[in-house]
Image 1 (tube, helix red, strand yellow):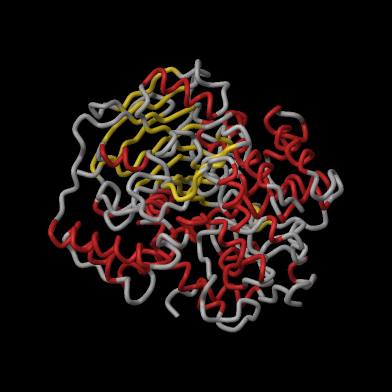
Image 2: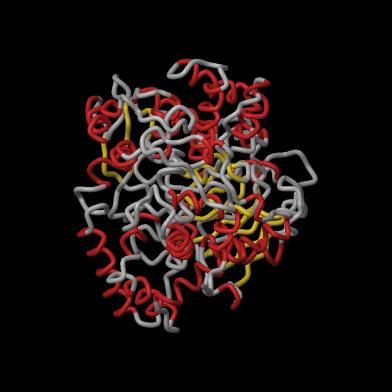
Length: 573
């Protein structure tokens, strides 16, 4: 039986039930969309009693299919006030599946001021324990304390001081599989603040004494499909040994930097002149220089292995998960091309528990507004430390890029629905930009990426239909697997593989068409939640400067009208 565990933070009551029939077709992001639409008032206060923190595994959690133990975290976002889902790797997803738990629903607000730890014991019992001795610490120290108490093999979801303080850009950090550091982040949308509002410092998952084994309708067929899934991932250039394993997600810098897609100096539209200092070859050199490592998994059993360990000159680990979005938004977006600075930035953000993307974009706005100089590494890290120290401006930083822009009266603030843009210039990757405009969750980087499609990314032609199809596909992806796995599985020759997996697991017939219907229903539910929360087509647009300021690389502007963008939402056409 797949379980749903409800935790009431006001009464302390914890109940466990089976996954209801109406939720059986959904995992991860889809479960969050279904539950939010039926259980949460869209007009509720994000940090109030009516909002819920929902943690959901995928349709294939616990089955041993690579990347399918990702974990979705969602609720109503304090940053955007929209529905929000953020997903994360690490060990927690698989360990929840070992206990048979598909979904955790954490609701209401506590009556007392004590911090709590939600403990899932080895025998499957779920209890709330006092966590005051862990509260008041950032994530690395908190993980150390939790391991001292519960053992070194636990799975952990934890907030830092950012979540405790209610920063709107706060993340929930998950420990990784190699070192056990809290380096994996459910970062976007401020879910750390939602967790903090419920006085929940951490969720601890002990290794199950008796693992919940998947009940397959056809185990032989499932294993055959699983082998095909792995084979295709290993043979595809991006996900094989010569792709992400070799250089990590830094390889995307080479593409975006060459075609004017990489954000430079707060999305100015300029080309980054020091690209060779920040490209994938320089990243590999920087990692190897101090005996770091590239090609490690973020979760057990992943064959893609896109993560890394970055050490300082003395061989001490700084970061165990530097990714493209972080590199781009604190790097060229701020005029910075120093790998040690980027690694330090990543570590501080993980430790404090904040979104590196939102924070990098905020620093770019601060530089553009003249608060600190372009490319000033120490000043950039200083702004992050203001968040750590809780200064007045640090708290503004913690409220997100839009708040920083308002405080500094900045003219160019790259946000949609209050969330900072992902690291793609909208003028030169228009399909992805259409997805960022129309996504229910603000400028999200995973809702409908269109890079690599056979259309000119700087032209309007074909982008609306492309975004529509990609949004449906990647919504299904967030119900089932990692984005990089879906990049491969969305190919027409491969889509039957996840359909075969689901058919062999659950018994009823899954087809590629059914998978895309699940994706379409997921995003339709998200759009419906936002509509009832008060959002309209007026909110589905880029900041004005993208419509008027040309890219210096291509001469393009973002040029979609409101009516054109709304065509994305006609999913039946």
